[in-house]
Amino acid sequence: MSHSTKRIKSETMWPIECQFIEHQITSGAWVTQQTQLVGFKLIPDDLSANLGVLQLQRSERKDYRNNLKADPPKLYAILYTTPQREICTLTASPRAAQRFMDQKFLVLSNQMPEEVRLWIESYVHKR
View 1: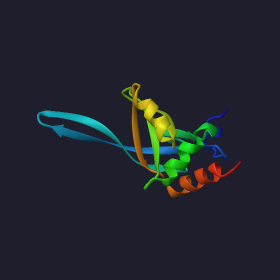
View 2: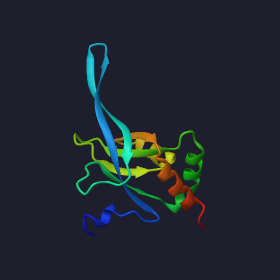
View 3: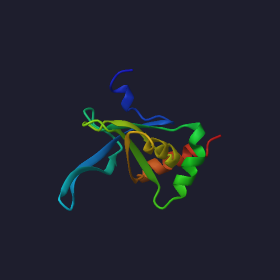
């Protein structure tokens, strides 16, 4: 699969760029850097860094339904805890995101964009 082929949206896969900021947290005498997920770019550029692929799974349909009922529904970016903090995966399943929390991953979330919500609703309601 070529590099650009991975950037094409389908019925079950959507390449989405995650937008992060690093900010400092001060607690007493300690200062640490923290990564924050601030948004999503739904049409990534060819050279997008922080590209994740949201891949919908039939086995997670119930999770998606529950997430869509939340106010607001969320997308979860699962990052490796390497210094580069590369994206491991994107998911709309809160349960899948929680499974990653038990391991050595950084799990960040932000409000699901409306276009993604509609796309997932369409997927959930197909037979």
